[in-house]
Length: 161
Image 1 (tube, rainbow, N blue to C red):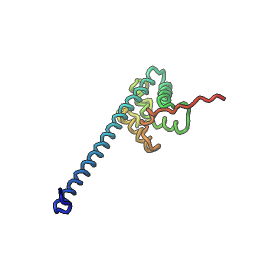
Image 2 (cartoon, one colour):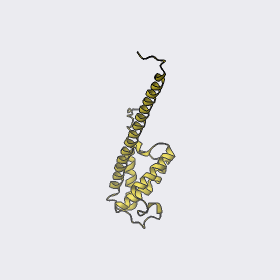
Image 3 (cartoon, rainbow, N blue to C red):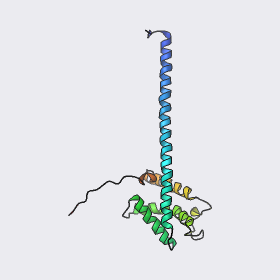
Image 4 (cartoon, rainbow, N blue to C red):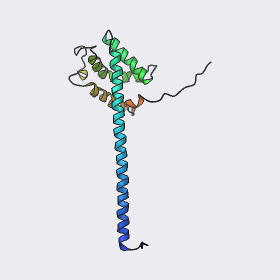
């Protein structure tokens, strides 16, 4: 049996404890990185999905305004937002540069239709515009925008009066 008071025991115990701590730290950092990469992948696909929905909504519109309204209606449907509020109008306004770029990609507007340099397709991509919107949303509301896209809606009982 190992004598606990032997001079080498404390050194070996410290080494074993340090190795265990290193392993735990690595596992924690590895898990955190996996979770971060998973979130980035999930958000990239959600971004792709929402851009596709917004693009498809704009297609076939007879005017830029009709395309904009179709995009907003499609986004409301995706988010389950069936009423209007000042907060939601602020969200749509902040998303407008991305909507303009998507409409341009759909052939709905020309570069001269908008005076907003931030929506110039030579200056920004749809991805860049969506990322800027997401950063604004996170700063404004304290939660990632793309996380609300696939939240389960609570089932509410039907109440008859």
